[in-house]
Length: 375
Ligand code: SF4
Image (tube, rainbow, N blue to C red; front, side, top):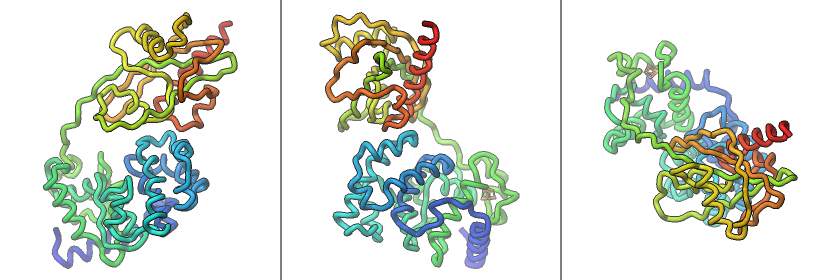
């Protein structure tokens, strides 16, 4: 991308800027690979501000790899609850167990060993190895790819394999060999604070004079748009049973299967966590829900449930736009369902449940409060 002299100046300017202006983030105060690994996993697809409180709570409970390796999955999920992309949380204890069994509790320092940990891909491995161990591995994710595309004036869909390989080559070539950890963080910081997706702050950019995209006046339009999968609407209905004590029924996390999830696959939509009895509906939601409950709860055939509609819930899971119709069903005795648990409706927010389930609980609580006020 640059000749030798340009490259030296580029590196100096970006590193100097980073060292002076970097944000003070909790995971930047440590070289502990466990903490850096945790932060990198949490930061995948998630904003820094959202991650910080989760990161701190998680470390209080699981301060090291040994405590995480023996953690009950439910507890890991509970501490992750609300952060989304729950496979990340499920992989963490598995990876911790692998570190204990294969690496005697020491975080591995070879790329192949780090990549063999569940939930760790190229980007995360490069980030951990460079930041914790100063290994010369250049990171490349969507954020860094945007910066590189603008710097090099690279057009087209960055996800295309050949283009992505070219970007990785550029990232490898730019990497400052003496401070790979700081260098990678400087690239990430530039993408997160100045070279942002909309309206890049080129006037403040420490490497603006090297930027081809800026020179060509196309920086803001890079990376060029790739075709997003069209949004698909999914309609669901959920039953929120409540007894006189405010208890409700949650079904257990669905078993994983190898089948490819369909668009309206309920286990995927509830992030494979504890959830209310829920189904995808094509017809009238209340009627479909009753038919579903009668099938699922054969012993309860004779009950004449009254379904009280709660506020409609909207939620998005990847390309799916979900509309969920929650129904409050007041009963004297909660139905017994194999593997299910009975919990206070108000306690759901501290359980390992998806954001969709939280929204359903919140809508049901509002409806229950209104119903009580009317009596
Ligand atoms: S000059 Fe602008 S577009 Fe180029 S790298 Fe800097 S912030 Fe990004």
